[in-house]
Each structure stands twice: as structure tokens, then as C-alpha cells.
Picture 1 (spheres, rainbow, N blue to C red):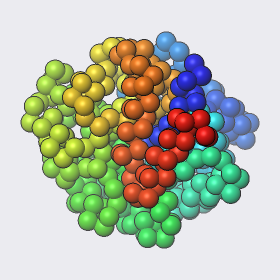
Picture 2: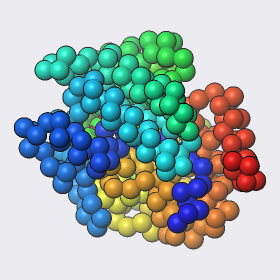
Picture 3: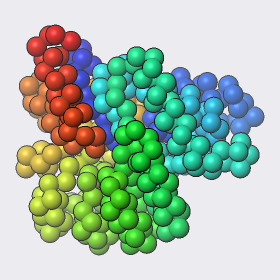
Picture 4: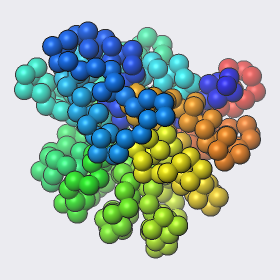
Length: 342
Ligand code: 5GP
């Protein structure tokens, strides 16, 4: 529907390599035919569902296709243009810096290349403000986490505000957040904003309690925090007390089988509380969706009026990691669109 595409939107939870579209995958396959990767291995189509474990196999296939500076530049530029075309006006991309021996890619060059993509899109006049969160993959353990934080700290200083913070993601069933606490604490102290995947699976109650004590600046998913799904009131209270926004990705949770159906999504719980929530895509390529569609799904599932949807997208501005000045600019943009000026 036109309303959702024209609605100016903020996207705060988008993993770079999970956001790669089918078109871009075709280009990548063309570059690396010897890999025998097929498009069906990099996306979960309509009506299909996979376990979270199987979703992580999908990322493996994509990572095989995206392993050089050239690939990352193309992927990042395509993803940014696609979000802009969908009406996203502010985007925080997140990505795990990877080192690839056979192409000479280093973690530092990885981050620099994503930054170059952001700058090139800006110079080309793409109508979107893009920032980067450096991701820690929890399965890589304490040392890599600390190394990633140090790298992110450097870019926090040198990237002219493009690198704003840190994400912690990766298979929630692997590794312990406890081991990552020193790195996360250090990141927080040095001014990096923290968005942490939290309670994505039911078995993380203790871990979520520990991580919420940091506290993070935003929560990714938070699917099993509330008591109705086996979480606890004390976890909910920690989220409420610190007013920590939740990034909610409906289709991702349905297709990844952590939520049984749209109407049972925890969007409802937090929306009814009036707590800050931001609708996001997670992995628009892998889950074959876009942000307009996610807003539309939330609206049709939970009976939101256009006015309520507008409010939801406008309130997302308060949850971004960029400065108050940027927030003001965005709010002006929303006002201009509403009054038909833009
Ligand atoms: P990248 O960081 O390579 O740009 O994006 C893919 C990576 O993002 C995956 O390997 C994984 O670490 C992380 N990721 C993407 N989607 C999800 C998700 O739904 N849950 C978690 N925990 N991690 C994810």
C-alpha cells in the first residue's frame, strides 16, 4: 500500500549481510560461480519457516559470497539504496567485521569499506542518513569481542559520527554473555552506544538479567522477556525503569520460529504498555521483507490506524543513536512530509 511506502521511516535493526537482496545475490553469484551457492540458500521465501539454527546456516552461505572489499562495497551500497527507495530516511546498519585470508580483507578494511559505501551514497544524493554499529558475534568469545570494541572505539573518534555504537548478535545458543561483559562495559565507558540481542530464545533469563544491568541503550528482539512467555516481571521492570527501547522484527521472528504467529508477537505486550518500540526488518534479504511491509503487517495484525502508524514511525526518531541535532532534523523532515511540503 502506498501509505506505508511513503511513510518516512527509521530502521535501527538491520544486519548488513542479512539485508542483501535477491538482485544483489544474483550479482554475487555471477562473480563467484565456482561456489555453487544458489539463491534458495540465501533467503527464506514466503510461507517458509526455518529454525533459528537453520537461519544461521543461511548467513554462512551469504558470507561465502561476500568476502572481499569489492563485494562489501557493492552490497552495502545496494542495501542503502534499497532502504532509501523503501522510504527509510535514517538507517543504522550493523555488521560483524570479518577477516578473509584469501582476499586479504582485514577487520579494519571491512569497517572502512562500509563507511566508504555510506559516503559514496551520500555523495550520490541518496536521500537517507546512514550510520554504522560494529557487531560482536557472541560465538567468537571474549578476546575477539574486546578486539572489536577497541576497533569500534577508534572509529567512534575518527569516522565523523558515522560509527555510533556496538551490536551484540550471533547464535544466542552459543557462548555466554558473561564472558563478553568486560568488553561491553568498556564500550559503554568509551561512549559507544549498545544495542544488544536479548532473550531471543527462552533459555536466556539469567543472561538477560546480567546484560540489563549494564544497561544497554537498546534491546534487539527481547522476545522472551515478559512473564506471559516465561520471562519475568523483574526483567520487564529493568527495561521499564531504564526506558530501554526494543527493536522488534516481526517477520524475522515468525520465519525464525521464535514466535508462533503474527498475532502472538510481543509487539502487543510492549505497545500496550506505551513503551518505546521500533519496528525493524532484521534481515530484509534473508526474510524477504522490507520496512514498509513490516509496518503494514503490524498495522493489520494489531489494528493500528494510519495515524497510530505515523506516530510509531515518528517516535522511532527518539530511539536513534545519532545526536539531538540529527533527531531535530529528522523530526522536521517528518513534519514536512506530513504537511505535504516534501
Ligand atoms: P553481518 O554481521 O555479517 O553483516 O550480518 C549477518 C550476521 O548478523 C549473522 O552472522 C549473525 O551474527 C547476525 N544476525 C543476523 N540476524 C540475526 C538474528 O536474527 N539473531 C541473531 N542473534 N543474530 C543475527
